[in-house]
Image 1 (cartoon, rainbow, N blue to C red):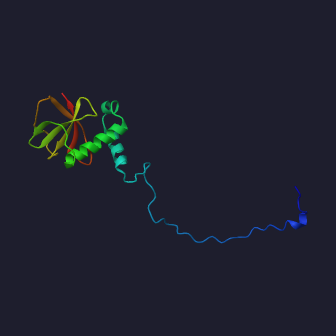
Image 2: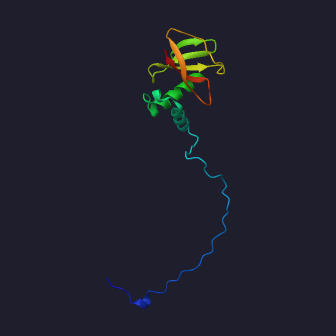
Image 3: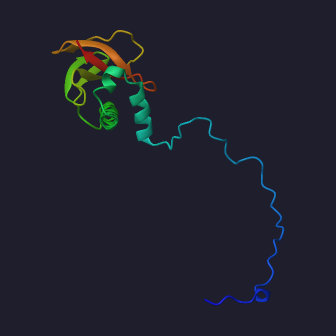
Length: 142
């Protein structure tokens, strides 16, 4: 390989460039939380999964929890028929195929502390309710 003589290489100069004045304020507020949500339903389902009791988290995987929460919402909206095992004046109880020993309860008037439900199975207390929509609950088999 031939190297050109030093006088043929030319001169290298660093030129000063002017920076454009940038706006100091961002058009959107900075992120305040550690978790970034893109308004995806799966992210909200994972937040719901974190609110479940530890006894359920030991049994239920996050993927199954997403399916369970989707099914609960579809039953509530009437998009899917669940297997009904109990009925009350203000509530309905459905089987929960993802959790053995737990049922899904959908309440029409969630502000009542006591719900009367007629069922062929012994029912226990509510162990979880949705923070945003108290009408979706998980109850334990007695």
